[in-house]
Length: 264
Image (cartoon, rainbow, N blue to C red):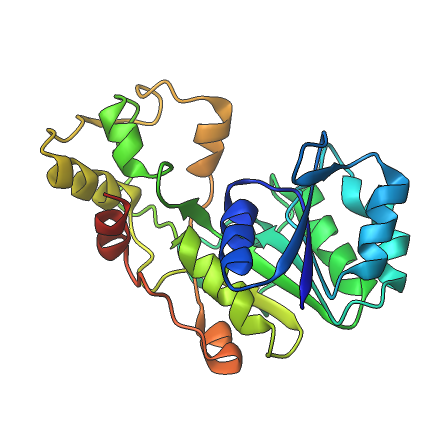
């Protein structure tokens, strides 16, 4: 029986674990604190034992400050583990701002607001020869999409017509990871086929549930949090051709339109 160790059981990793368990896998999760189904991150002996037993190891934990906590605490054990597959959830934010141009896995890593993330991406790539690094754009899915933001009155339409973003439905990340089990190691952008302005996504969500579009606002007038404003500080289109060519993967939800309808 294949055994996946997932360090960091967040939204996407939990979705992956659920799918693998349904397919007959053994899955061990690691979180900040233990419960019936997961180990505690700082339980070094239990985590080390799981690292030594797992056939597949995935980290979905982002850097904290300037350091990657998984590499700092468990990196040496993962490097020496007998696993036949290892993976890391990175971010397309490592590319920085491309001025709306397309970026693929060969693009240089940016030096903007994601320097710690870019360094973690490099460090995971250097850890093992069988490493798969999945660079992910904005993630949405059931319970975490533009539909919720519209329903809760948190959706904005920002007057930046040339601002382009890429996104990915959570289940397409799951299928991309699973496709990589039989594919070569390396870096993979997992994104949908239609980078576009965020306003189009908000408008589509409003139309689906019969709500009026939010007013068009300047970035300053919208009163966004610093994190949300940072979202608009970068502009790029993420190419997914490498995952399609080498993994035989294709998104089930190639655009936000199919993805949002599925979230209903």
